[in-house]
Image (cartoon, rainbow, N blue to C red):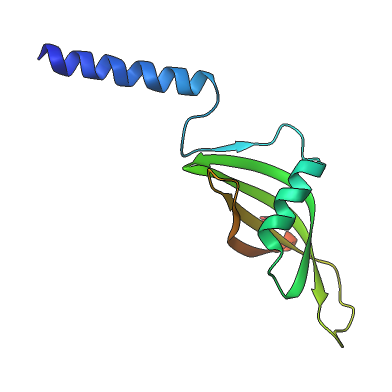
Length: 121
């Protein structure tokens, strides 16, 4: 029983320290400033350099999620990027990137962002 209580106390201490530092694994942390800095642009470019057909331009950094590495969420303008494509209305997408512990960046997912779907009236 004493070992169980000691283990529980260590677990609670670990969680409280991680929470106090804002690095608790699993939850998304909204960005305090949505500005896409040069560092974030470089990260985004590393993660999307192999994409073809559509070019994504990050317009806002929305937040991060600590995992075994870091997930990043960007709101992006989507621009058709293939020969002969016609200019279309502006389109937006959510681009989620994963940065591993070695600094490698890959795409987690890309989802169309439909502004109209957010309206609930």
